[in-house]
Length: 118
Length: 107
Image (cartoon, rainbow over all chains, first blue to last red; front, top):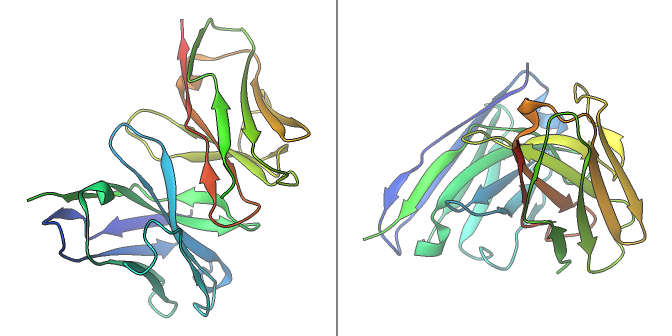
């Protein structure tokens, strides 16, 4: 069974940093691209970052480019999202997703809640 | 960026009915369209990818179709467990973008 478990969420002040982790199991992690997608409270879904299976390439939307960094440790089956210079508009539940077939998110974690507030 | 205009924002239907949700892409996305279902308090789940391919384990009452840049999700024989919010997503080009969602209520 495919499982994605996010940790690291919490309350953080504007301008500070936070790092999310996602531990994967039930599949061969280094065969898949992975992504982070977020959902602000009561809102829709927003893609945040993607990384190739080797970790050699990463992709971001303009809203987080230069502030967020996606990375992975294939030996530990773990995906990361380093979030710097956090803003109130980054408040959301962050989902780790497994990507199949170019951007199709075929497995989702339970989500990690991030609140940016003073 | 590719814009995905999803409609309606909400709808209410009875058990056994058929409903259709639509997404209009701002440009050609070459059938690179996925549909997700999100039940209250839960994570989204993939229903359909490549516009019309059913994800493993998804009931056959869910189907997807396309006409030009207009994409549709049809749910036949509505069941109570279909009450959820549905999102479309283009997976043709970065940045991947989602529709705003359709909340389906079962009467």
